[in-house]
Length: 191
Image (cartoon, rainbow, N blue to C red; front, side):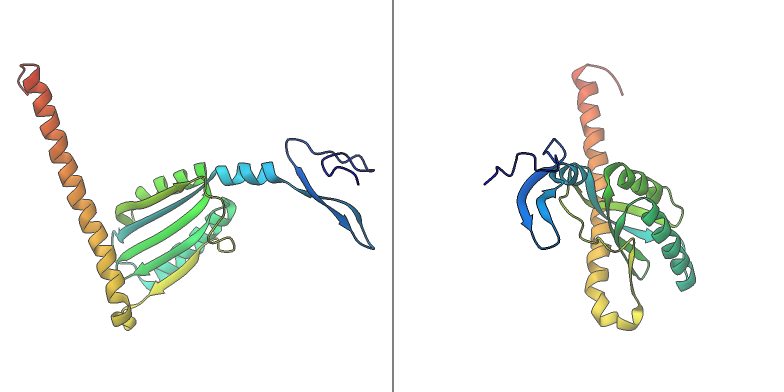
């Protein structure tokens, strides 16, 4: 039997972009089964997943949110971004995934978008091996106050996250001021 890593009768050879992992035999086709491992590895190494929460900067109607969703889904599709967006009261929670530079650009736009305030990145995963939402340019989950009992715990969690963000920022600012005060004092100077 031939070595699966050697060229077949049609001259197909493994190279840096593909790996031959087996042989296919059927009535219709005989040849090597090739998987583009390096291409898939490269795509995975450049994929990023990001989760954030934010508040509406102003009251948004159902139509406003629907318009935002349609535009975002279109933009995501054009930028190879997938994910899901949940609206809950006056809160957004979103997971986005896609090419690293496009995710970085998108979160920057969101942070500067006048419809968002208190944008807080909950987590970032670099070099993710696969998408969680491969078929959704943007899946919308809109939880209304009609299901208040069901959404109350989610609202509490998201509001606590934002509260802790504010507290963390205040503590970091206090720590920074104390650090600079110590630096100035150590140098014998006056701040």
